[in-house]
Image (tube, rainbow, N blue to C red; front, side, top):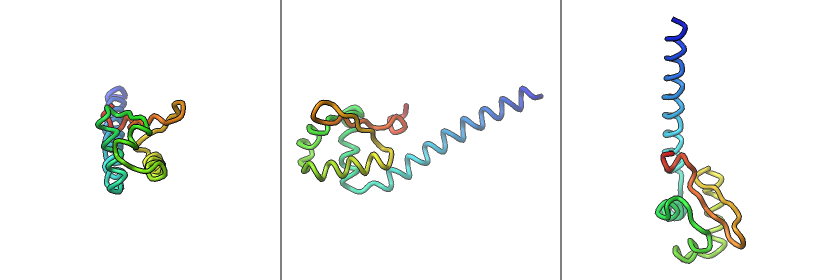
Length: 99
């Protein structure tokens, strides 16, 4: 009986975590501005990873505008930023890639 209860608790925990993560992702995506969504979708199209300097040229944004958008996306936990020489590598968080 204890094993069955433990199994049910484990399954419920897994389902709840999956549901809450998906719900959080939907909420984050709904809060993105048009410009943030443009940047986020461009990173997604690049297989979830893009160099900030290339992205700036691709989207025709100023350095300061893109930097601000990147900071906002980081704050919303949609992307991560890692320094790479004189630019940054922008990566979509795993939750948004389905992994």
